[in-house]
Image 1 (cartoon, rainbow, N blue to C red):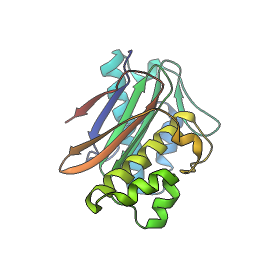
Image 2 (tube, rainbow, N blue to C red):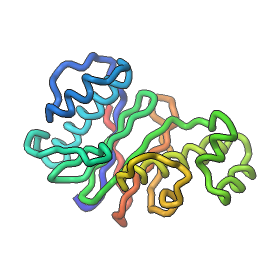
Image 3 (cartoon, rainbow, N blue to C red):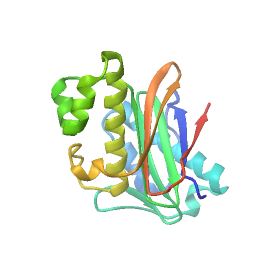
Amino acid sequence: MDTPLIYLASLPNTVPSDELYPKSRDEEVRACGGEKTRREKYFVWKLLEQAVNDTFQKSLDEFTFSRSKNGKWKCDGFAFSLAHSDGLLCVALSQEEVGVDVQRVRPPKTETVAKKILSPRELIEYAALPKKEKADYFTRKWTERESTFKRLDLPAFFPALPLLFQSQTHTEILEINKKRYTVSVSTESKTIPKIRILH
């Protein structure tokens, strides 16, 4: 797998049933307080199962999983990253460290939020945009920061951290189920990730 692969799927309406592999992931998901978060975490892992089977023709239990000291899930056979937002699940697979984020396109709740996310140069660009373009710009920058944070496996997400401004990301805005989402992938790979939308 020379090219990072991105799998996208809608969050199913069904109830989580099967036990997840590994057991530590299953326990983590079942310990989630909110029903919505529990479903998202369960089904994004099921999407990982499907992506691994599709990509490597192997099942998850043929790999060993662990967590880093910062809580990032890791695997002995490939790199991966998970994300979910407003009914959309996302999995990135790669041979190199990878981070992925997906967000429904929305403007910042307040201008204060924009100032926390954007660099001084980006704030100037953002201020000059027509109102209808601001949501795209803001969401793009947010997902780029978040995907880089995940790839670097940092201990806490500080969006204004200069390190998050300097990494290579690939970003797409997609319309899925009549909603617009921004998907960002942070990777050292020089090839453009391939996106697969599952129905």
